[in-house]
Image 1 (cartoon, rainbow, N blue to C red):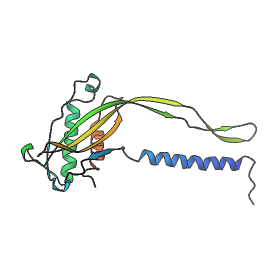
Image 2: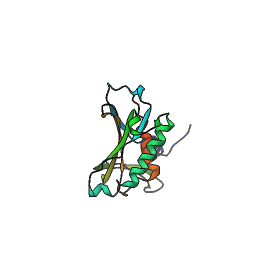
Image 3: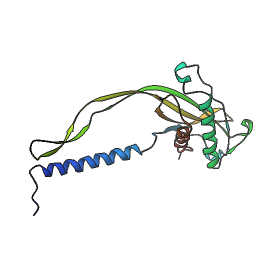
Image 4: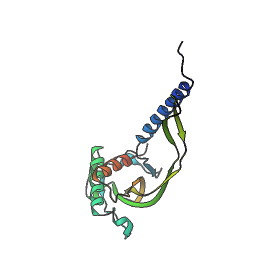
Length: 192
C-alpha cells in the first residue's frame, strides 16, 4: 500500500486536469484557420474546369492600404493559381474561362478574453500545492479578412465565396501566410 502525504492526491488530480487542459489547448491551436464558405446551391460545380484571375477592385481605405496593396494582390493571385492548378483546373484567358477568381479584404476589431491562470507554489513546511486562479485579460486586435470569390462567367454571378481571418496588427500578410490561408479557404471549393 502506498501512503501519500495529505496533499499529494489533490496535486496529482490537478496535474492530470492541467495535462488534459494543455492537450485540449494544443489541439485547438492546430484546428486550422477557421475558414468558412457559402455557395449557390443551384450552381453546377462539376462543369467548372478552367479559370481566369480577375483583378480585385479595392476601396480607397487608408487603414487597409497598409496591408491590402499590390504585394498582397500578387501573393493572393499566385497562391490561387498554384492551388487551383494543383487540383487540376486550367488557367486560360478570361473570355474562355468557366469561372473567374478574385479576392477582397475586410477588417474588424476583435476582442478576445482569457481568464485562467495556473501556478505551482511551495506552502508552509514541506507542502507544495498546485492552484488555479482567475484573472481576466482582454486583448484587442485588428483582424483582416481575406475573401475569395468564384464568379461564373456566363451569368457573371457569384457562385462561391470563401473567407478566413487573421491578426493584421503587424501590418501585412506574408507570402507563406497567404499560401496557407488561400489553401485553407480553397479546401472548401468546390462544395460537397
